[in-house]
Image 1: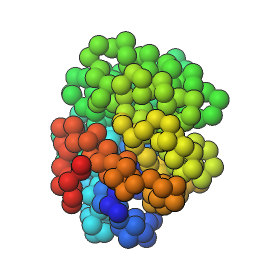
Image 2 (image 1 turned 180 degrees about the horizontal axis):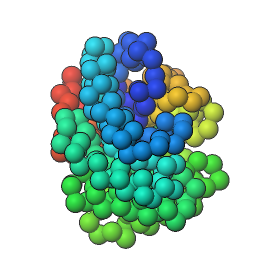
Image 3 (image 1 turned 90 degrees about the horizontal axis):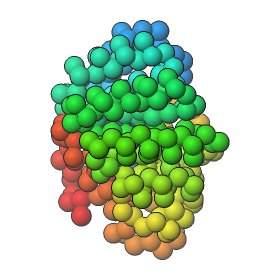
Length: 273
Ligand SMILES: [Zn+2]
């Protein structure tokens, strides 16, 4: 079955992973900008990173027949440094016109601090001015509900924000309803240890249906599994979900959400619906 991985950090994956993804039916990936595992020392480091996302990865992916798209921002973990964050935000417009740039992301909150909120709001401001989609990272573990609530409140109080152009990612059982009720798209992240397993994602699909739901591996440099979208497909099949339902979650839905982007440049191999 063809599928997309709507959130995966390919810069930290080896080339063999592209081959495994392609063999499993992956036709496109979307890569949000994220934390490198250490705090970068300057805006110039982000400039290089944005070049890697927009120039290098699309070529690496293309050699395996995979279409690569990306999102740009400074992530919440580095947003404590507001001065650096503002320098990085000022760099982003230069890259927004590049093919396959889907929008601003993954922005959000990590420890729900004042500085993180400031930088989150300034990213949203940029997205509104430039008519970009938004991809939001929600915090982990005990801060998740509070952070998701804060994010949803900030976004819904800005009347310019159209919820159908925003994805709230890393939802779990206690936050999915909050985001769906406000009209946002939601992403379930299939991590081996934290966030959500394929089984828990299947349970949420049983409860909430398939509307405005995406599933991703969020494969990165930490404990993660880039094959977790295919693993979810297997889990859903084993539980008796029909092929149309699975196709909607792993293929049609990401295409519906991403194709709203100004620089959407993917030609899907089969119709989305
Ligand atoms: Zn991520």
